[in-house]
Amino acid sequence: MFNEIDSKKAVLDSKRPLDKEALNNLKKYFDVDLTYNSNAIEGNTLTITETKVILEDGITIGKGKSLREHLEVINHKEAIDYIDDIVSRDIDISERVIRDLHYIILKSIDNKNAGQYRTTNVLISGSAHRAVEHFYVKEKMNDLVNWYKENKDTMHPIQLAAEFHFKFVYIHPFIDGNGRSARLLMNLILMRNGYPITVIRNVDREDYMKALEEASTKNYLNHFVKIVTDAVHRSLDTYLYLINN
Image 1 (cartoon, rainbow, N blue to C red):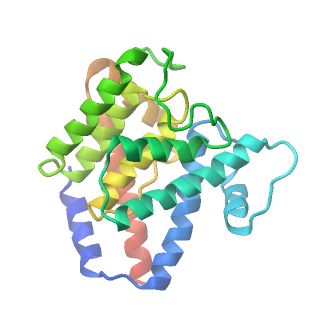
Image 2 (cartoon, helix red, strand yellow):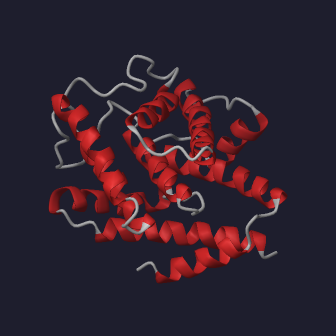
């Protein structure tokens, strides 16, 4: 599954260090693309153009858009910057990193729960999966970080990132913001391994949710890993297009 991606990544790696102007262009593009798509998957109604205006021009969108939707855009961009900083300083995933990332995603939206593991049980809308009971969350998150450490040097980075994403949402450690956190943590793993930032598109939301449900209820991850793999292909193609022109 990963042979073609490995070939594309080898081409990208051969071009390093990448041109600073190209990197800045890619950064702006993916800040908007990832923020729009990740928020849209969770129900945010801001368009990609409105997301761009908020992030790049600092303009507030008017009638019909809530303060929460604006904050989701601003916070998500800050969360991407946090991931970039973590990668640049070669800091690995830990429970502290996970909670700090979640705090950024929910700050000023739900300060009480930002960065805090849930203390109540939850039901996941549209899913037959029951998240672990709240008193197991801390234990399961510790297990997840240990699983990551045990597999990070032997598992293909895309398989590792996809499985980590799935295991994270399976636990559902927070009251809100789990999907956004999972997709950013998936990117943290990919970026630490030299892959470009990767976007699960809102147009693929139905397939993405079905694949997660299949992984949760049938313990079959292949479809979900394929969705992540396709997303990495798209990002590599975008990088290669820009640096080859």
